[in-house]
Length: 142
Image (cartoon, rainbow, N blue to C red; front, side, top):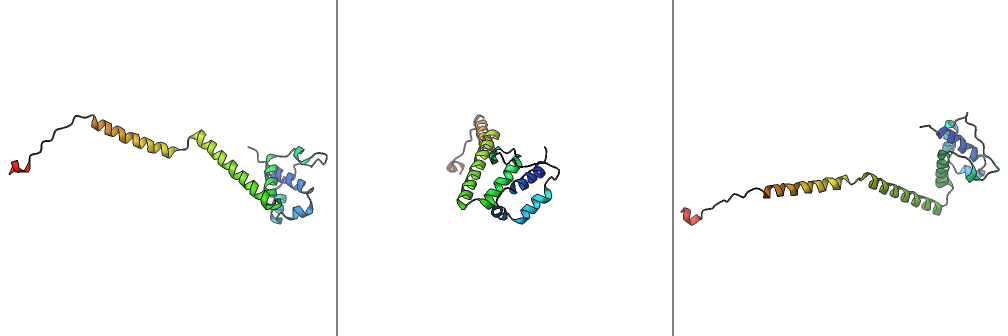
């Protein structure tokens, strides 16, 4: 699996050159410095100003980084809440799919197996021939 993050950092830095300065200033300088220090300087990327943002050919990692920057630094409180709600929904849906695919109710399966084993033991014991135990009355003993 190829590590595309250094290339994505380069793409993000190039895109930020076309973003208004007020918006870029909202991003902490430590993040900008990290992107600059870890980007792949040999990777050639340029923004095509004749294309819209959606039409740009960007790495998936670049899109993810920009989405996080938007959510954390540029979004309004309402937008942030909507994004977080969507993320929670996506995680819950993914977990449900995993549970359905891998049948992760292993504890329920174990519990049902224990109950079945106990019932089988009772059935096995009940199939044996009962032994008659005769008790003598206390008066007869005396």
